[in-house]
Length: 235
Image 1: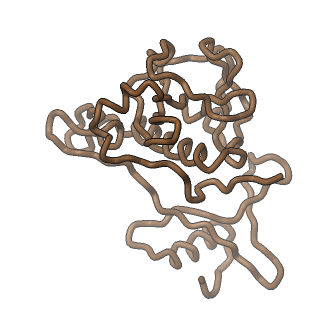
Image 2: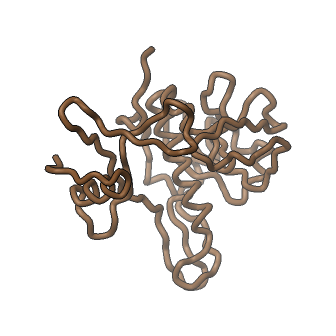
Image 3: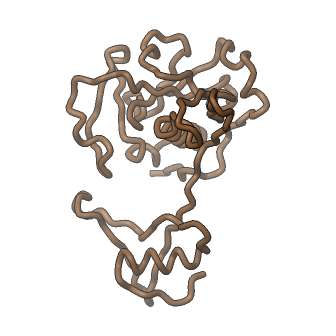
């Protein structure tokens, strides 16, 4: 089976020059993906649902949909529904492996799915849209208040900026650098696994790069922290 590579070069025109233009929201072809607690609303084939911006169910959104960019089929957005509460059990949400599905009454044939589970099957364009939308919505959800004065900030530039109405500080989406490494010894490859992962699931070691740290130093530190193994040359 051929699979797309998530985060490979995509086809999305981010159209930053339109982030302050009302025309993108008024375009009749504009559609939004829908997220809830980081999970994606997907159809029966695990493809992102594309919903009209004036859909009544988007009333459960706390803030306006985020403009992601332009596609051949029109503007694309991402919306979050933090005010909706599903009847299904949501206790596994946020865990590394979340196989639960939530169904919104407005879309009875669709379901909210863990993004990690569908990412390998998405097209390059959909993968870029989903990754961008989920990351931006996650940032908005955890940065609603100004880090400078504590006041509630407001969404600007179609979701790409938050601005504090009290002190005027602008806040921009956060991107955290990480490393993922293949540690080898001859024909052997070092893998790790979390205690809550499904049987047979392993991963390369990975971790965040600390402030002022080089990529090579981050690799050495993370490998020691996670496995107790000191590595040699990093390349």
